[in-house]
Length: 161
Image (cartoon, rainbow, N blue to C red; front, top):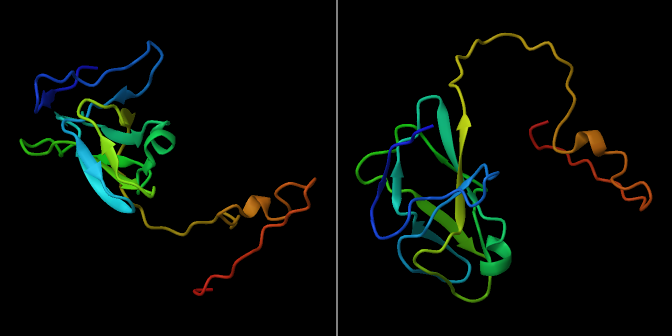
């Protein structure tokens, strides 16, 4: 799949798949950024990517990010839409510093990865849904989490019920 891409800083490499079996590619940060403790920060990802029709580009943290940098994605993943590819639509990597000290992300560092995922827009058909309610938020495990530990999950009541 060929993907149109533009780098802001041509001296930095294009995103790369680090192994032959990698499904996600690594972004390279464009500038050194300091994230104060307990603060959100945006780190320039150096690229504008034209996501193909029928796909979304998901941005996820590299697995070592929390352990090495005390950074996490506050929304778990980022979603890059097909129409986010204008001349000023550089992919920004949003992070939260959950640590007690400032964190420096160096220019050229790899802290995020991207993956293209096929997707479709829904065409809603409003109707009666006939399926039996099965619950959610762990409802299939409400008896015991770990029978050997005899730990039960409490069932919380919703204020809207």
